[in-house]
Amino acid sequence: MFDNLSDKLDKALHVLKGHGQITEINVAETTKEVRRALLDADVNFKIAKEFTNSVREKALGQNVLSALQPGQLMVKIVKDELTTLMGGDSEGINLSGQPTVILMSGLQGSGKTTFSGKLANFLKNKKSKNPLLVACDVYRPAAIDQLHIVGEQIGVEVFSDRDNSDPVSLATAGVKHAKENGFNTVIIDTAGRLAVDEQMMTEIANIRDAVSPQETLFVVDAMTGQDAVNTAKAFNDVLNFDGVVLTKLDGDTRGGAAISIKSVVNKPIKFIGTGEKMDAIDVFYPARMAERILGMGDVVSLVERAQEQYDEDEARRIQKKIAKNKFGFDDFLKQIQQIKKMGNMKDLMGMIPGAGKALKGLDIPDDAFKHVEAIIHSMTPEERADPAKLNASRKKRIAKGSGRNIQEVNQLLKQFHQMSKMMKMMQGGGGKKMMQMMQNMR
Image (cartoon, rainbow, N blue to C red; front, side, top):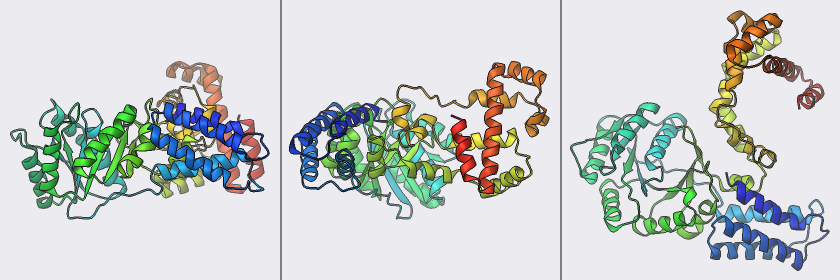
């Protein structure tokens, strides 16, 4: 996410590294490189210029604090300015109304239908809502089928009428169906076009007037860069939407849309899509995104994801097993499953401060644990419960059964035993020993 922009900003901010003080000369040199990085990321020239002017004024207007070097101060100023540029505070979704009606808008190919499903899944699982998806795209072949497939994936009902080709009456019928059947949230998936046109704008405006949504969201493909910002402006002029959704942020995006869209339309980015899976949706936090762009990680989001998968009963069960030295590979496998539910590995690693730069160029596949799971599944229930029984002949059989080599089986066993010791130390308060263990695992 924003790898290219992050690299260029990092190089720009290195201009001040090692300087004892901030001067007009070194600040001018730094802001020039920052502006160039923003322009390369497809940020609007005017916005990039205003941004760097503000950074320069604040940098020259401050004395360097005793605890900060000039480079550190500049990073802080850039982070604060990026946060402000992207909206400042996070803005939640308006869930008032009985039912709450959410109208989705955007161009064809922006990921609108997929995101409608992600949003329904998010509201169902994290907000305890009972959502209904309404299929109002009567133009794109298989659009209705796609929404039904998405609804089936997440266990959410989809309202559609293949005999009705009027999107406005479909939307009103969907809201009526929700009221009559106890749904408290309605998400209306509308048709997109390949380009902005008057017919599309009139149609979606008519739907909005007919259903009076609490939220109108504009879905935009972040990979389209500055074109996304221009499209958002065209939609906002007609719809006056409430917020923006940026999809495909896990792709090869330069970041210009995310950084400058708020300044152009003066509407907050409310959600981002970070992958293809139905749970790959995040609330947009400008400060956290600014930190990630600057390579500072996003520990808060990482902790939140971990907490979502935390099961107190399971944790107590594991604690008892660790205390009795009965922590086995079945338990280890459950821990892996919880990590996998948190999101794709590259995204998770990018949330760790400094990891983004360290992992640059490395391909971390979504199935990073696949070979580990294969090895564990090749063990007998007895072996998984008591890893001490894994002698040379058993290891050889497991390696053959999992399609891995004996060295990988031994490596997994070594990591498992180290992890088991570490978890026991954590229970016993052995902090110093645990740190030594972690260093030895590198």
